[in-house]
Every structure is written in structure tokens, then in C-alpha cells.
Length: 298
Image 1 (cartoon, rainbow, N blue to C red):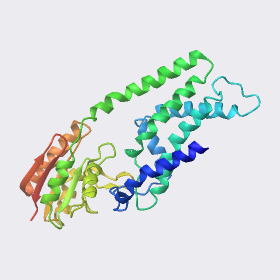
Image 2 (image 1 turned 45 degrees about the horizontal axis):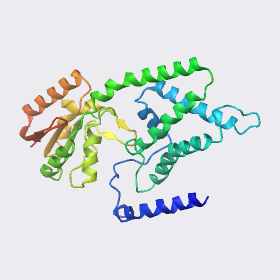
Image 3 (image 1 turned 90 degrees about the vertical axis):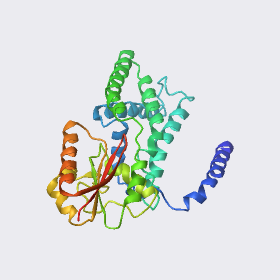
Image 4 (image 1 turned 180 degrees about the vertical axis):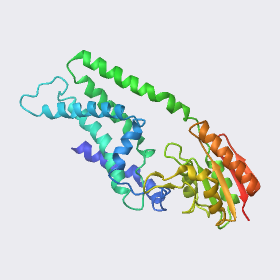
């Protein structure tokens, strides 16, 4: 107990240097207040949006909990739950549960920490618990089948990860937008589907380094943190919607980020050609991640 209390004191002392920075205000105000439904979404994100993969991980973790609970019973004699291994299980559970719980509770206030980006630290204990769950099974053929199934499901998601794992440069585009933005201008981002996240990526820097530039409420296909998605991402490339939007803003920033397929790329291209035809193109910035074109609408 003495060492435990001493560890808490040391942790508190090491946190003190971060206190002045935390008092300056949050740089994550763009994150919404989390709700209970966001916790399952977190684990779904960790599993690569593969529900079968998530189900298998959860089953293995549940096995650990069942075995650990049985060890406290008089008849609990499973070889896995020795006195030496139980603290490991408890430590992994704390490592998994505490960051999620603490960040969820803190994020109910002005400081927002509940995000899959920040909670990536729970992945190691989750996978370690999965491994312990598999090793606690007595039937070796079942262990092998579970390992192979989890490996194949994880391997299935690898190509999708590396397809979009390249380093993305949204920072340059956001600073460029801030430099050219004038009061009343409008920002249009495509594609704002949750998987592509054009507005989310750009808005991260707009909030981290505040300026007048922002996405207005009438932005076509705008991303909503309340519903965690866009009601109609295709509105950003719909000429009829863009026409209405242009009547309310003297300038339009047409922003195109990552696109899911060739169809989306064609839609973005047609929207750009339509804007070129109906409004005066001023200037642009093009990076390997995002392209931003600025138009005068009046």
C-alpha cells in the first residue's frame, strides 16, 4: 500500500508542469460532449468498423472476466488464474477502463478528451486481454481457431488502413484558408462522410489556431457533431445547393479532401467545372492531401 500511495504522489508531481497549460483553455473545443453511444463507437473504430472482429475481441475479453471471477470461488482451480496472474488481469482492466471513464467524465465539461485519437492508448490492454482470454481456454484446437480467425479478420482490414495511412497535410491548407478568409465568406468541404472527414480534418486546425475562418451553419453537406456525420455529403457538389449558398457569401472556398472512389472524384470535378463557369476563380492551394479553390460570387 505504501508503494501504491507513493506512486500516486509521483504521478501527481509529474502532472503539475502541465497545469499552467491546461488553464489556458482547451485546444479540443471542436470535440462534442460525448454520449453513452459514443463508447461503443470507440470500440467499433478500434476494430476498423468490422463488427465481427469486434465481437470476437469482446468474446475473448469476456472469457478473461469469467475465468477471473471463477478463481474467487472455492472450486476455482483453472490454471490461468494463479495468484501471480490475477494482478495482471486487474491492471489491464484498469488500463482499459480508466482512460475511457475519466476522459468521458472530464469531457462533460469544457475540456474535451474523449476521442479515438487520444484513446488509442487503450488498444494495447484490449489486445493483451484478448490474448489472455485465448490462453485461458483449455482446448488447444479452439485456441488455434480463434487466433487464426482474429488474425484473418485483422489482416482483412490492413489494406484499407494503409490505403489512407499516408501522412496528410491539412495544416498548410487551413493556414492558407485563414490568410485568405474575409468576414462573410463561405467554406464548402467535400467529402464530409464520416469515413472521409474533410471538414473534421480542416476544422481541427481552424479551432486549434483560432481565426475568423469557420464553417457556417448553412455550409452544403456540413458535418454535424451532434449526429456524428453529414446528413447529405453530396450537397457539397450539388450545383443547385451551391447556387443558394453563393447568394449568401461574397467568396466561396471549395475544398476537396480525400475521396472514396472514382465516382466521388468525378462529382468533385464536375462541381469544380460548374464553379469555374459561374463564378470568378481567384487562386488556389493544392497539396497531396487537399485542394482549395477560392471564388468570387458577386
